[in-house]
Image (cartoon, rainbow, N blue to C red; front, side):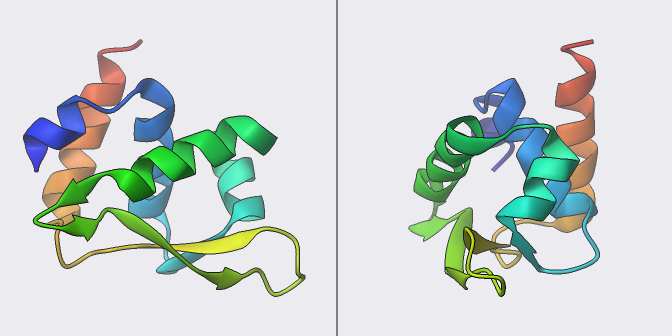
Length: 99
């Protein structure tokens, strides 16, 4: 999985970091906008790319329905394909290379 993480763009790493640092398992687009600083189509493109990123045939993130207020989707990270602690370390390390 680390090889797949190394191929992610900066924005994809930022959004994935938002999932990894969140206390909730399911995040709404509004929360992701606040955490990542991405909005609209930029965030949508990143979420789409992350949902197409597969490991052993399982998507890294997947939509789980409409947001409670009806605006946007709710997204869930598949934690059964990632070791959260190791993924946090790897994403953090990769984000530091952009600084």
